[in-house]
Image 1 (cartoon, rainbow, N blue to C red):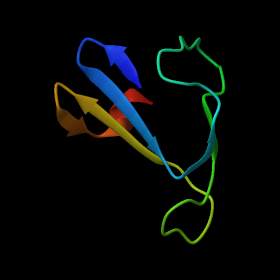
Image 2 (image 1 turned 30 degrees about the vertical axis):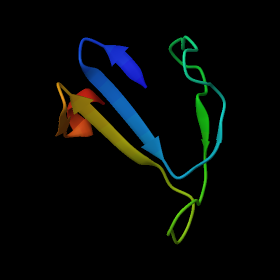
Image 3 (image 1 turned 180 degrees about the vertical axis):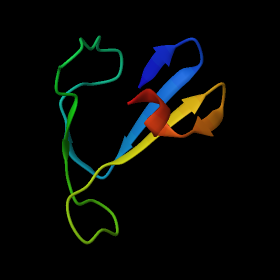
Length: 62
């Protein structure tokens, strides 16, 4: 998801996307459903934040 100003978030292991590229998202909206895609042992979310092309610790944004 492109947040503008060089900030991108990525979400992995989703079972279903609720939004498509280009959709606007409001705070609190569901954007996807957690799943078990790929090599996993159970449902979970892989979450990344990239700022200016560099991955950063997501805890700083929570």
